[in-house]
Figure 1: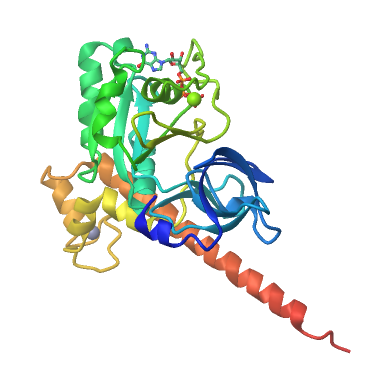
Figure 2: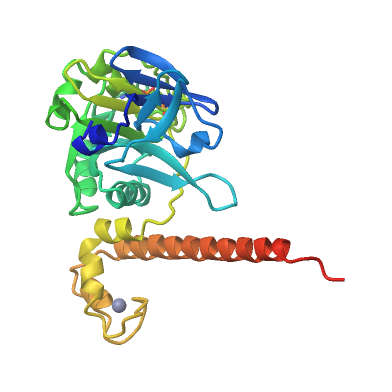
Length: 329
Ligand SMILES: Nc1nc2c(ncn2[C@@H]2O[C@H](COP(=O)(O)OP(=O)(O)OP(=O)(O)O)[C@@H](O)[C@H]2O)c(=O)[nH]1
Ligand SMILES: [Mg+2]
Ligand SMILES: [Zn+2]
């Protein structure tokens, strides 16, 4: 717990860390061990998330306050309506996990990077299953991963089933630290967590044809580590919807964002405008065309989401106003 969190616990209340959250109740870990914690009527389960520190009223057994967060990872919830879903709170390091096979996808990794950097969480890319790739290709995956962003904390290549799998992670673990694993189903998140924590999270096989996982982990869970600190397991995500991550995108592509400040036009789309510094860098071989294309696509998606969100709010205001108006006679 941070000092700020400790100071925010009110009189007569006790701190618990949420290890799992369901619709009507959560499981909290505190000084007296594990307990079930309810929500007050005015609070929805969506307001708290796994990893949250909460102050609990011991008699009511309910959340009295959510303690200030050091970080909050959120994504766009699935569905046509634009809503956010909190994924995890108080995470220090995000281990973005992918395997040395068809799962490796630059555009998807960049989305995870934007998610982490937007929330001020240090991103590390973890490449699993090097033992199933030929040695040269495992290395080339690492090279591609390192080229994604200067904001990456590290790129690790780890055989999750090897007896020394946990060792690579020690720099990010320890008392007071919280790490989380994200990535597609079947890449080895739970296998790694079992290696780190002596937990027994279920792990599952992958499909023969395309190596896709079977969604073995079905809910988020926070596990305390024996050596101190915490690790969070997450279900594999089919896709990561982003929302409100303009800053995160600028941090992933900091070099391109900086470059674009030298474009002649402030609103340069980096297509065929005269004086475009980004196109000039591509022509000079200093910027990768594919990466620039992915940057533009991600920015466009974020801008569109922000616009749609604005519209939805305006629409909601209009409806609210019309409801308040007295009916005309
Ligand atoms: N050979 C090899 N197999 C691995 C490695 N990492 C994971 N596996 C295997 O891949 C399968 C899937 O691993 P899980 O740990 O269940 O994957 P997960 O990411 O937790 O998947 P979900 O819970 O579905 O999101 C299991 O059969 C693991 O034993 C690795 O580095 N090398
Ligand atoms: Mg799992
Ligand atoms: Zn430009």
